[in-house]
Image 1 (cartoon, rainbow, N blue to C red):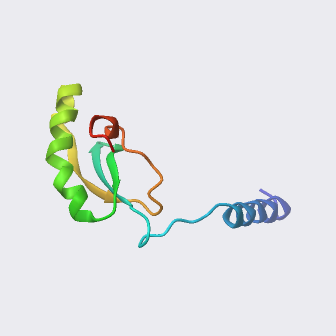
Image 2: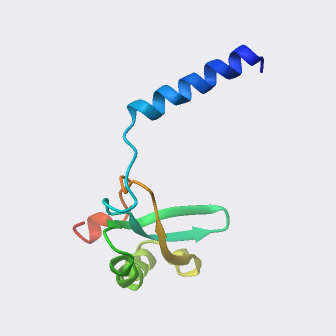
Image 3: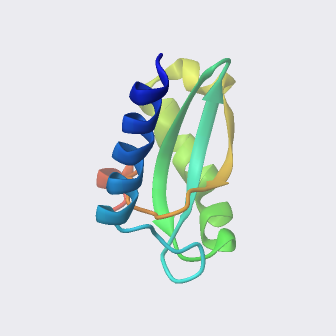
Length: 97
């Protein structure tokens, strides 16, 4: 990559950052029930405003997940935090979230 190409790419990133709103870790719901399977991961349920709300849903989400996919019993189930909370958990429809 030439210096000119690098500078052009940096400017493009700066423009994107200015035009895309950045979420808040404090004001927005940003906790999720998540799973991990090797290198794969997914946001399963959420977003929730507090970590405790997400923790309270881990077992319930695991139960539904195991009904849908028996292999999910072997996944690592837990919680995570995502900066802007815009993602939608894949099992939200089963919990009216």
